[in-house]
Image (cartoon, rainbow over all chains, first blue to last red; front, side, top):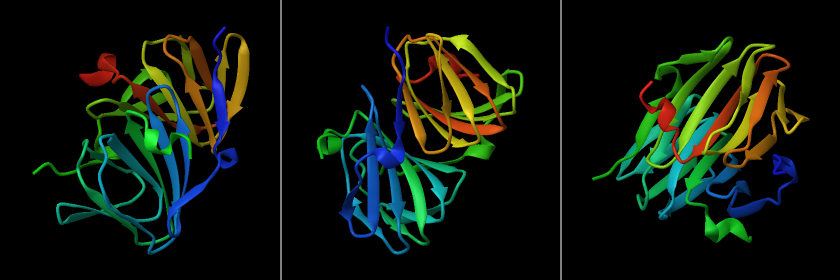
Length: 111
Length: 111
């Protein structure tokens, strides 16, 4: 029988791909979830990827910039970033956020 | 230019498909996110769907049962439920959770 797979986020190996930006990835068959903890002033530099992205901020304030337009994301706000759209983010406070990616982030799968 | 789409979860129409189980859906091109608020003892009855599901509990305690095996999900735990696997959930306390579905939940898209 196929059963559920329960993952404790804190038991997942953490990465710090950018200074003060710690992430734990969970990959299912089709999607990747990235749980980020970012210190105030931490920056996810301008980048893009083929993966569609949906981001939910769960703590703090994150400034997201696309095409020179910025939005401050706070808990209760969700942003949808289409495939291949360049974006950058800066933590205005210590913050936590969850990214959902489709398809899965192969570039992070074996890190 | 394609820009980001920011959605305030509380501005999304809420549904109560089961007693004491309130949900707000956000659909991107490829995934659906469901933000649930469930009162203590609220039950999501045994069901299955073709959509793969990844659930994160953000507040409270949720008992999830698959194949007669139960797990209590609390904040920090993530569960992956494969396509077409029957599952049911009961809120042991007031709780909040986020489901990610792939592909999108067409059955909820126009509700």
